[in-house]
Structures are given as C-alpha cells and as structure tokens.
Length: 80
Image 1: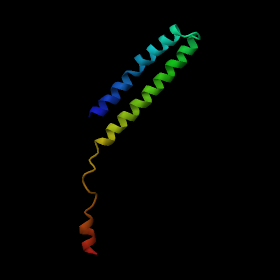
Image 2: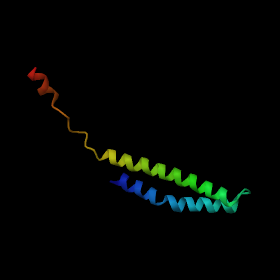
Image 3: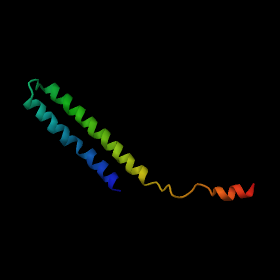
Image 4: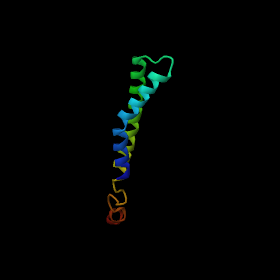
C-alpha cells in the first residue's frame, strides 16, 4: 500500500516540481527564454511521471499473493 501511495504522491508532485524547474531555468541561466523554460519543465514532468508510474506499478505487483501454488504438483504426479 505504501508503494501505491508513494506513486500517487510522485504523480501529484510532478506539476510543482516542473514549475519550480521552469522558474529556475528562466531566472538563473543565460539562455533563460520562455521556450527553454517550458522545455525544461516538460522534461522534468515527464521524468517524474515516468518514475511515478514505475513506483505505482511495482506497488500493484507486490499486492499479488504469489505464495499460493497454482496446482498441487505432488497430487498430479501421484495420479499418473
């Protein structure tokens, strides 16, 4: 459950992170034009959202209970 919530938190925090990166690029670089700031913000948002999808999906995969055997192999072999 913690991985699911961490993935959702990362997805929600993608916009503020990309906004902050765009502002920093616009103010503190020599090439701080508006299109460059948008480009940096878009790349940051894509990276954070990609990480969020990965964390969220790993949380979904960990919820599957793989400890139960699909079929009892010993009983199947004994019948033959």
